Length: 110
Image (cartoon, rainbow, N blue to C red; front, side):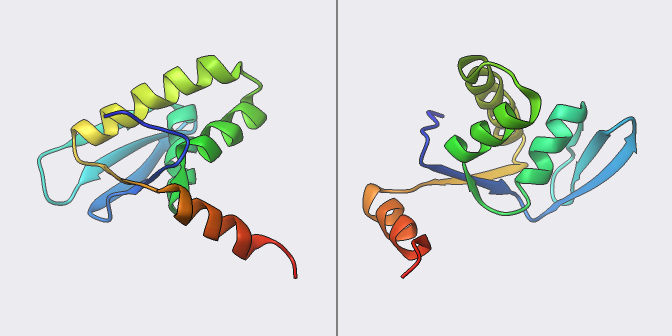
């Protein structure tokens, strides 16, 4: 999968999550035999995926929160999203430029 800044990512609705201590989480697919553990940073990303978010915004949030280099963050987030996608815990769709422009326009104060 090739993620772009405009790729909208969000949780698969058929997943249960549980915090297991130390900020770590475990995900369990309700439709497939999949159990997925994550460290505190992965758990924070999972929290941000509660609402659809673009990959660009997700990277911006993690860079701001953890103070890591944007290029390093992007590589790590894409790998993490790929791993979620490979076990059907993540859904996505590509936003086209006109959709992004409409969202930006709608967010501007009048």
